[in-house]
Length: 307
Ligand code: ADP
Ligand code: MG
Image (cartoon, rainbow, N blue to C red):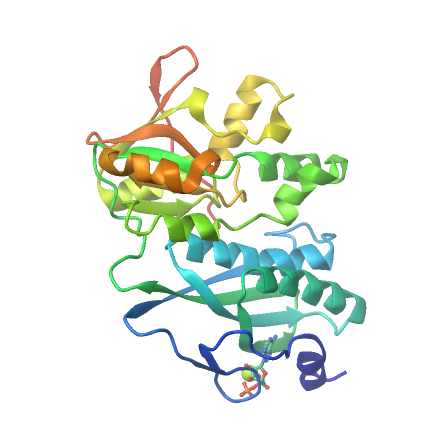
């Protein structure tokens, strides 16, 4: 199977969305966002052995390659439209490709996004997805908009993916799914347009990702250990381990969001149970943790660094 057959067999499908004027097959794709919308573009690479264990089922790899990008769109408040897929494969393995495409399109169909192009080469297993979305001009949820006095909240749960990674093959299936099939918080991102002052998706751990918001927004925050939305699947673990997973565990793709006090009621109404308030933005720089004993201590924001 050469790469043109491979693309036709596994990746070429009729477009779902009117915005896609031309998809796979030409030198470039044509995408027409709605008028008065800004295009939101994000890209993430997954490398075997670094971003997922080498023995991960191919369906989970396909799913996750798109999920992490839809999560970035969600964190911008964007409506997903389409994506590109750059694949580096050691070989054209049909079993791998069937599973990969099934996982990928399971999520693509759920969020109504079209695969409109990409590139296919031989090499170490690596997947880059570039996702495109749209947001009404000026309404994107950025990292630099948090202000002292805002309430901090999380959409989604924390710590499950990191515990699944730590347990490896011993992880029960429900926990393993937190790592392999995270749910991007797309609907919440859309609902938070016009309400949130900042948003970031938690990929490196809450402390690290919130640290990015604080730096970009020139402010600080205190987070309340008792109010963190720890994944219910971790309920049997010691409290200290739950806290560490919730603060440092990556890969959960929850949204960490700041909201001005006068918009809190609207956010609670829009998100219901999915919304968990857990802290406050403050003028003093740095991140602090209020522990179960009520004591406030500084909290390091360092996360995983490739370099
Ligand atoms: P070119 O020679 O113009 O770079 P390619 O041979 O790389 O074109 O790809 C042919 C077509 O298939 C292009 O439209 C490209 O976007 C698309 N394509 C290539 N690889 C993938 C892929 N992995 N997924 C989706 N579309 C792909
Ligand atoms: Mg090419």
